[in-house]
Length: 461
Image (cartoon, rainbow, N blue to C red):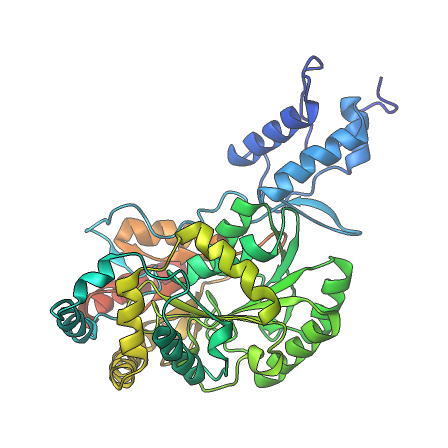
């Protein structure tokens, strides 16, 4: 029998369990998940203390602990010492942002895509490659890690990102998401904790969830991780690693200051933990040295080409310390066997030639023009980002949630993505949406979408 009477006792959740189940913790975890999905428990709700819930259900406290752990590893719950356990704000958000198929009626302003002005140049290079006498070799298996020449080209690309790396430390992967998944699978284990920004790239959320890795939001100062807070979090939350996007953080479009990059580098060196630095947008922004420049032996640096060059170019270069290389390489092999030979060669030829400069210049010119349009229509509402960023973080009127605005925008014919898709754990989502300025096929289509969004914002004021 319960120790206390709960007849008139206020509790945020009062589940009902059958006492004949062999695995009560599984039944409790299942009911908790169903109540979250069905809206019985809303994001941000604080759950009863574990011992109190165990007393209410007349079961062992360890049963509640196991159930909560199952749901935590699914990303449904978040907890911190002294504050309790909460329903995660991102518990039911859709983190898979790329849909199966396309809705031709929607103006795509959700996915962070570069403009398509350079596609003709890339196709001309590809056509030249496939007419070469030995072109058939690109339809065979590649060596798992790519060729020496392709790694030399990768070294040049990384140099442009502000990072010096020996070719022996470079790995090739089939895109940034592939690299990130391989790093998590190769270096972390089930239940490990990784510190991230309060709003984070959804790809790490899906990969971490699949592998049972917990993401812990690091609270910020001036819209970026703070070195002092990070040191405390590493100690308190027993973090095994950090994930950060210093250049044009996705989704907030914020560029981390040089001082903070140095502070984070100092923190990971002091605590001897790993930092995964995502350099996806490094070439688009200001030439500030990456975190890996200051902490090369602690940093695994990912330089993906999909956002800087073309989304279909599924290639990323990974620079990693020697101590981690073999484990990451094994994970890449288990995921891919090898990288795509034709993509590896195409990326290498772009990276090692003047074509990369031409591509970046064309992208920059188009992105600046599109951002001028965006600021003209939406600047009044706090459109975070700058002229060379391919996306913006649009602040909404204080009473409007990102989810509500995303739904209204979609009904009006424009796809944007709400802050709730990006938020982590017990962090509170911004009243904001991410909008891609380069995803629409043309400036005319972008302007049409901006007009719709401006109209919605004015109606909501």
